[in-house]
Image (cartoon, rainbow, N blue to C red; front, top):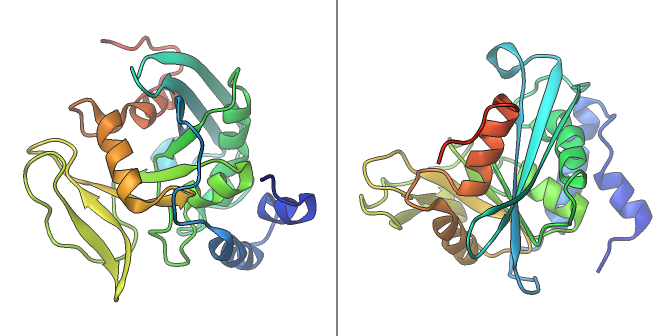
Amino acid sequence: MAQAPDVAAAWCRWDVTPKEAVAVQRQVAAAIERTDRFAALRTVAGVDVAYGVRGRGGIARAAAVLLDLTTLSVLAESVVQMPATFPYVPGLLTFREAPAAIAAIDGLPMRPDLLICDGQGIAHPRRCGVASHLGLALDLPSIGAAKSRLCGTHLDPPAEPGGWTPLLDGDEMIGACLRTRAATRPLFISIGHRVSLATAVALVLHCSKGRRLPEPTRLADRLSKHPKRPESR
C-alpha cells in the first residue's frame, strides 16, 4: 500500500537541519516493518553513492544496478551526479546520499522488486540507516548490507560461508554479522524495510556468488566510482 502523500513527504524531506534530521529518523524508525511483506521477487537493485576526496566531496555520484534475482544477470544501470547539500554528519548520511540515490533508482527502466543498499538498515543508533529510510521513502522491500559496523556488538562468525552471529545492541538483535566468503571479513546485514532478518541473510547469500559483497551492491559500488569502466567478468 502506498504511503499517504503528507506522511511520505515528511520521510522524503532532505532539506533539513541536523536536528530536524534526527527527528525525521525517529519517525521513520517507528514506521519500519521488520517482517516479510512482498510479492514475488524477480528483480533486485543495488545502490551506492561515491564522493570526492576521502568520501566527503561536494558532488555525489549515485549508481543503481538492476539485476534478475534468479540469474543475477544485469538488466539495467543508472548513474546520477548532483551536488550533495547536506553536511557530512556520521549517523545522518542518508540525508546526504538519498537525493542522488533515489534519482539513480528512478533512472532505471523498471521499478525493482527488492533493494539492497551498501549501508545500514536498522543496525543504526536510531534504527534508521540508509536502507531503512530508502525502503520506506520508496515503499520497497530493502536490506542493509554494510561493510563495517556502525553500532552493536557481536561474536566472530563461523569461518565457512553462511556462518553468522547476532549483532546485538544490549538485548536487542539489530542485525547479523555474516560470513559471505571464507577467509574474508564479514558483512553486517540488517533489516531495511519489509524484509525479515532471516530472509535478508538468505537473499544476501544468494546474491554473493562466492564473493564477499552481494552482486547488486558490488556492481553499484564499482559503477559509482568508475562510471565508464567496463565490468570484468
